[in-house]
Amino acid sequence: MIFVGIFIYLFDIQLPSVLMDTINSVGSLTAPLSMMMIGSSLAVYPIKDSFTDWRSYVFAFVRLMIVPFVTMIMCRLLHIDAYYANITIITNAMPVGSMVLMLATQYNANVKIVTRNIIVSTLLSVITIPIVVATMLL
Image 1: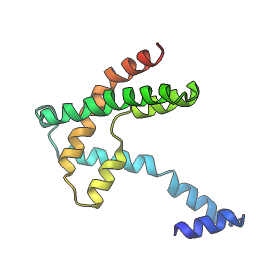
Image 2: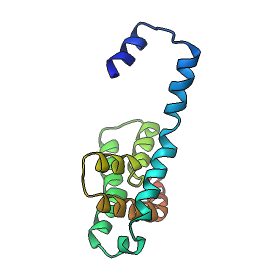
Image 3: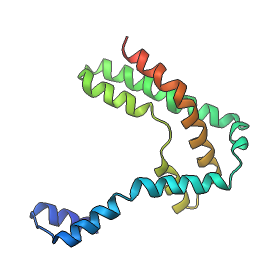
């Protein structure tokens, strides 16, 4: 399927508008479907259990604080343009995304751990993102 898309792109093939509208509609469903999937996994998992496992906090700390600061140091050492460095640093400071949950579901991984880490990292990101941005502006 990917090769079909590459072929259409490389040879600038114009698809009928009905087909393009269908493709665009399916593509625009990605974000709402991922939110529904997270919501359904949260519904069966007690939220209070998310806050009892210390490993989730360690994971969130590494993901939300260590990774952005290492990225910041690397960008400064490599003299990367500030605009691109800031985009990279802020992107690395974001919480765990919904794609991880979809992959965990698809490959029969432990969805409870993924859900727990999504909850903890999302809630802690309210505190950590301003810290990362403030440090970035120094």
